[in-house]
Image (cartoon, rainbow, N blue to C red; front, side, top):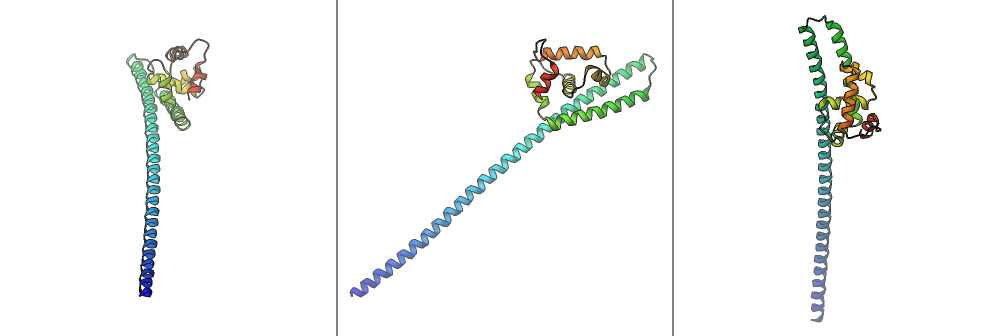
Length: 193
């Protein structure tokens, strides 16, 4: 009888041990599965965050392109108005020369726009943040050209205006950025970029 009790006890201990091992194995598997789930969720969050940052950058790039294109359209409108005035005043107009100058201007502006957007995508936003008064699209165009190192004469030729007009615009820009007389506008704009 003692042998039977010992046998039953050993069988009971064996099954308890077997159940405990199976339960431990199941708990370990559940723990590993939970750890994998947490890891997957973290990776998914990181992926979503990266996608959101990419979308934000793409949106910013598109906004910068829109702003640069607005500057370009403003210039085209100015040229068309000048041409219309010359034609209405019966002035002699060399349309071939105007088209040639505009083609050169288009190429220069596209290069400038591409350079600024690729190298400094936040350039136009930073300008607006630093300005104490609202900047117009023409102001932004001048800032872009100054940033690219163009002097007064080059900007005047590019925009078909007098150098005096460029100097006045530079003066107005200094006022809009609240700069004193000693501060160099070009260096200030380059620091913003």
